[in-house]
Amino acid sequence: MSLLKPSVKTPFHIDFDWWKQNERDWHVFLRSLLCPEHQAVFADAEEGTMIDWVDLQTAEVKPVDGVQHALMSHCALLPDFSDAHTALVEAVFRIFLVNGNIPMSAEDLAKKLNRSADTILRTISGPRVYRGLRPYQ
Image (cartoon, rainbow, N blue to C red):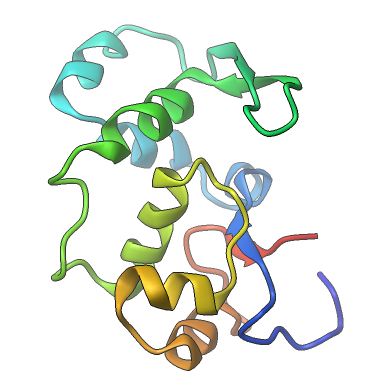
């Protein structure tokens, strides 16, 4: 982690490596966010099943977790995935899932969530890491 204090312009993302190192049940949590259709699809799949994914920006082929991919490419795009009553950390986490985990600043997140950029920044840049939300390096 950088020693520089993040600002409202600092890009953040979900650091899935942080999840894997710090949350034993990260895969269970991601599965709980799947829509009913994909919960059925992944019911018998082994944890950590990887698939090839093409980054639309760079055309680079990257291995990604199958559950993570289904969540980001389908389930997170459904209208009931997030609403105005979703807690701030959860809403920010879900925004990153919706946008394919493309780094976004607190200013960008504030526009999407209709909340204060300063409040978002204070919440996700503190000493405690919530849901793997960390500055993008």
